[in-house]
Image 1 (cartoon, helix red, strand yellow):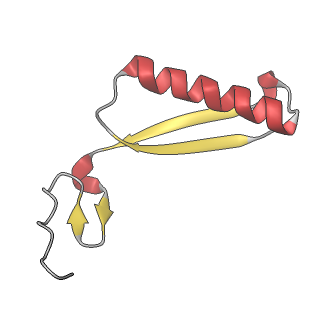
Image 2 (tube, rainbow, N blue to C red):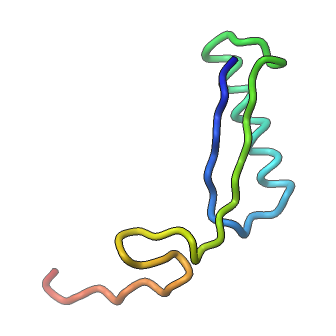
Length: 69
């Protein structure tokens, strides 16, 4: 039973997330040959303040590019 977990920064509408999990399930079915009814796909939406790249959380504006960097 394939299980796929997708982590996303919150903010996408329900229809978009639903389309994504269905497309992932179909892709797993097509590539692995697993029966659709055995495939589990779930998405977790994380607040932007709880997701960081380095020490900057995704709710903070990007730092301006430094000249010569």
